[in-house]
Image 1 (cartoon, rainbow, N blue to C red):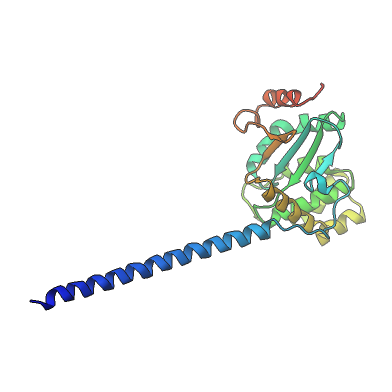
Image 2 (image 1 turned 180 degrees about the horizontal axis):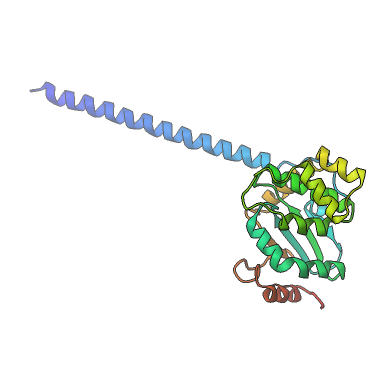
Length: 236
């Protein structure tokens, strides 16, 4: 009879030991996840200072393609050319915003992100190549017009992007070489790094004078978007 309690005590000790092991295992896994997360964060925030920049880009503008620097309001648009919601934003706001750019009434900075995949990188690079030819705005619009219903289908490659370039008048040898060689691929990565530093985690994300506009009411309502620009200093 005296041995029974000992047996129970021994069993209890083994169970506690198993719990301790489990706790250590879980703690170790959590620690590993945190290490990986920190490493990913550090990697995503790295900037290639040697990256070739498009002629319309300044590091001080978050590596964005800028029109009419030095005036207000300042509109920062963070977008991914494969993003269907970005296409919706472009369809509602694009023509109006392009008109303001041409009239030099607003400083618009386009930040071309690439989190959706390789074709986002190819499209962003080609858009930067087009900006060197002063064809960014029509090329930008055409990319959204030809956006695939699904992501990374192979629709956008060097050949198809060069064909889009022809449609907007970007036909120089420089443009062709830029698209084929991925001249601005490192710059595209820098845009992503800057977006991570600014906690931009969805597209589109739009700021006016550094303040994000209301996603529910001002992204897809032209009148509300105009009102936000006027409040930001636009003189129509």
